[in-house]
Structures are given as C-alpha cells and as structure tokens.
Image (cartoon, rainbow over all chains, first blue to last red; front, side, top):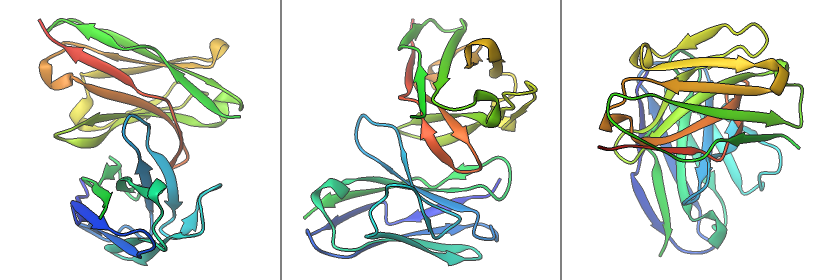
Amino acid sequence: DIQMTQSPASLSASLGETVTIECRASEDIYSNLAWYQQKPGNSPQLLIYDANSLADGVPSRFSGSGSGTQYSLKINSLQSEDVASYFCQQYNNYPYTFGAGTKLELK
Amino acid sequence: QVQLQQSGAELAKPGSSVKISCKASGYTFTSYYISWIKQTTGQGLEYIGYINTGSGGTNYNEKFKGKATLTVDKSSSTAFMQLSSLTPDDSAVYYCARRVHWFAYWGQGTLVTVSS
C-alpha cells in the first residue's frame, strides 16, 4: 500500500495568515491526489482533486500543488471558518490511502 | 442536489453483524460507484472498497476482505455494507461516498459501536 505522510500533525495560525500543509507519498502518485476538509461532527468535504484542481464551490484561497511524491495544500488569508482538520488522499493505486490529517487551529 | 443518506447509529455485541445502508438521490445511481470508508480517532481514514452500482461488482481493500460485504439495490438506489464478526476494533464512523477516484459527495456517517 502507498503510505501518505502528512505534516504537520497540528498547526496554529492567525487570521489572515497563509498556511501550508504537506503530504508525501511513499512512491510516485502522478498527481492523483485529493485534499479534504473536515469540521468536527461533519463528513469530509472535497477541496482539491488531481493535485491542483479546485472542487466546485471551494473558495479560491485554497490551492493545491505538487508532483511525484510531494504535494501541498495552501490556504491564503486564513478565515475563522477554515478551522478544521485536513486530509490528503491518493488514488493512484488500490487501496486508496489517506494521510493521518492536520488539525488547524486559530492562534 | 446529490445526497447520500445513511442509516442510523448501531450498537452491536462482539461476534454479531450489522448492515448499514446508504440511499442516494439527486443523480443517476448507476452512473457512479459507491465507496465505503472507515474513520477512527486512532487509525484515521481507511478505504474499505467500492461497489459498481450498475453490475454489483466489488473491489475490497485486502484488510477488509472477510469483514465487509458490499451490496446494492438498484431499485431503491441504495448501497449496503455488512460488517461481520464484529470486534471492538470495528467501532468507528463509517461513510459511504460517491466515487470518481476522489470523493466529492459523502454520506453523513454511521457510528458503529461494538460493546458487550
């Protein structure tokens, strides 16, 4: 199985700040990567697919980048509603696998 | 609008089975596969497998073979997951999700608690 190593595990940032979350795959996943946001008590919501494509309805302050084994999610101008956990997911190989998550809090 | 409505929370005894449902609406059911995903605090998100809603064909994560059985009822646009021989390690929130390869639509989750 492809291992997805996500960092940091937790992050504290101020409103208006730019935040970056990293995800490293154990092998090349050819940009077959998605990012999700999950708020407490809710289901995960798709933010990014194909490493850098913004899902419908997702604010443009979210962006994804990367290739090969290294990927990142950037949140520009952090808003209070962005407080959540964030997960990456690879879909290059079965079984699909997820990162362990990054918990984002306000400073 | 696309909706996936899951059945309610389950409290089950060790060794028993539970069957969770996921009713789809707002799109052509057989046009998309349904996947199932397990979430626990300790293990995070784990992919269980998917069912081809048109043919009923399935693909399972090796880890969940023998534990999960995926089925579908096209007449009611509902997917099912049966979990068997339950142990406390099966306690989790289980999600269904509409699959492309990423998951754009998720059910609200079903909490399964295994306890004697």
